[in-house]
Image (tube, rainbow, N blue to C red; front, side, top):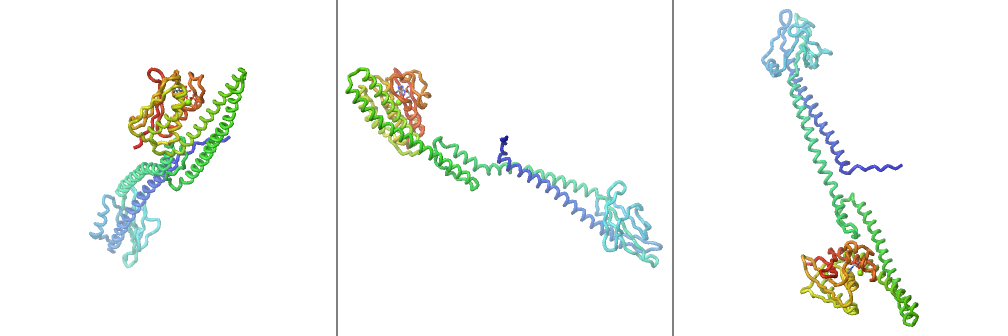
Length: 461
Ligand SMILES: Nc1ncnc2c1ncn2[C@@H]1O[C@H](COP(=O)(O)OP(=O)(O)O)[C@@H](O)[C@H]1O
Ligand SMILES: [Mg+2]
C-alpha cells in the first residue's frame, strides 16, 4: 500500500537546520568562553604563585642548625597581590617542616630546582592550588634539600569565572534568539520568488495560455520550463479543438444548405398536403441545425479570440451603428424598426472587433427574435462611469421569470421560448466576449414589458 506522506514545507526545511546550527554555535560560544577564560586565569595565577614560591625559596638562608626565612618586601607584595585568597605554606629541610603547615600535602612528583610543580589538593575544606619548588641549601657544610610549598585557595577566581560563564551563556542565548527572526527572514526571502511566481500564474485569467515570462531564479527555471511546456501542449490541444469545431461547423453547414434548397424545391413541386407538412418540418429542422452549427462556430471563435487577448481600440458607437444597418432588413421583415439613438461622440474601447461583433449580433438577434411583429427596438450607445455602455431594449415577451445567470449557461434557454427556434448559445457568447474584454453583460426586465440587454466595456483613454 502506498502511503501519502505530507512533505515537509520548504520553510521548515530551511528554518530548522538554521536554528539547529545557531543552537550549536551558541553552545560553542558558551563553552569556548568558559574554558578559555578558566585556562587563561589559571595560567596567570599559577605564574604569580610559582614566582612567589621561587622567591621564597631564594630568600632562604642557612642559619644556626637550620634555615632562616627572610622574606623580602617584593615577595610579600607578591603574596599580598593574590587578593582575597587564603595562603598556606610549608618550608621543609631534609623532609622536616621548618615552618608553616605541617599537613600541607607534598606533590606526587618531587620538584626540581628549575621550575615549580603545580597541583591541586583538597585542604581544610577548600581546594588548594599549590606550587612546589626545591633547591639545595648548604647547612653545616652539607647540601640539604629545601622544599617550599606555597598553596592558595581559588575561590575568587571561581566566582569570576562563574560570572564570565553566565555572561557567555547569556551571549549564546542572545545569538540563538537573534537567529530565530533572521532565519525566518532568510526563509521568507528565499521563498519569495516562488510566491511571486505562483501569484503571477494565479493572477492569469482562466484562458490565458501564454507562456510564463515572469523572471524566476535559476533554480526555478527547470520548473518554469516544464510548466511552459505543459501550457504549450495544452494550447496546442485547445487550438486543435477550435479548428475541429470550426471545420465541423463548416462541413455541416454546406450540406445542410444543399438539403434546404432541395427540400424547398420539393415543397414547391408538391401539392399533396401530408408531404408538404413533412417537407416544412424538414426545412425547420435543417434551419435549426444550421443555426446551431453557426452558433457553435461563433462560440468557438469567441473562445479562441478570448485566449489571444489581441485587444485593439474599437469604436463601440460606430460598431453599433454598423450592426443596426446590417439587421435592418431582418427587422423590416417583421415590420419592426430599430431605433438607434446615436452617441454624441466616439466610444473607444480596448476590445476585439470580432468579439464585439459577435456580442452585438447575438443581442440584437435575440431582441428581434423574441419580439412580436410591429414592435420597435430601442438601441443606444452611451458613456457611464468609465464604461462604454450599449443598451438594447425591446417590447418582447420578457424573461418569463428565468434567472439571467442561468440563461448565460451553454445551451440554456428560457422557459417561455419553446415556440422560437434557438440553440441557447447566444448569451454564453455575449457573456464570454464581454468578460474577455474586461466588461460585463446584463439582461433585465424592461419597465412596461420587454427586455433590456446591457453590454458594458471599459472606455479607452
Ligand atoms: N431579448 C430577449 N427577450 C426575451 N428573452 C430573451 C431575450 N434574450 C435572451 N432571452 C432568453 O435567454 C435565453 C438564452 O438566450 P440565447 O443564449 O441567445 O439562446 P437562444 O436565443 O438560442 O434561445 C433565451 O432562450 C431566452 O429565454
Ligand atoms: Mg439567441
